[in-house]
Image 1 (spheres, each protein chain N blue to C red):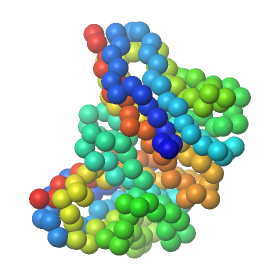
Image 2 (image 1 turned 135 degrees about the horizontal axis):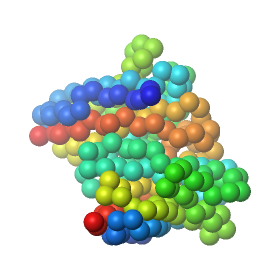
Image 3 (image 1 turned 180 degrees about the vertical axis):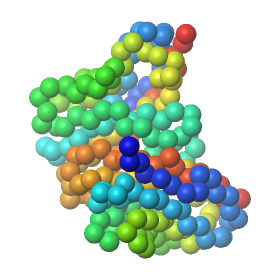
Image 4 (image 1 turned 60 degrees about the vertical axis):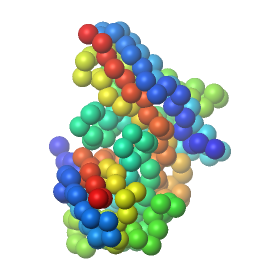
Length: 114
Length: 116
């Protein structure tokens, strides 16, 4: 069964460093998303991406964040200068269409900023 | 206002019993979708069940069913015959019309513990 994959599973970085979180969505999906979940809190939307551009972003997704689909399979989230409060689980998700299909989530990348 | 409200931070259920996890939602849209996800301690998000706002029948998926009461804006998850492996966090989520960017709004979750 096709699934969303994410690498790495855990990333530790120093405050101020850049990190890139990688995701491979399900191959026939057209919509891609990033969410984050601070430990013990709810899942929060960051950004949605369709047709090689951002379709929506939340207040969390400020200038420190960027997304890219560098090739036909990868979807990346970059944080330019990490802050302590960026420590969270980051989930990538994808969906077939923009209607009411479920979003398939990857296993997450746990980012720890020291 | 919160889009999704889950008022039960923690629930306990005896193995083999049924349990209902509450979810209420807030939207002014006529078209929307409601979803439940399970998050075990390992952290991944597992899709469980979906209910469309125009679906007349309650959704069912194996031991999961969704008690959809549109007028009350509630979408409670019912798990029948609970198993130990059902112990996890459960998140209710909503998706509004496509032109909002298709994001999901999640509730704060309910931690379910199944007691043997």
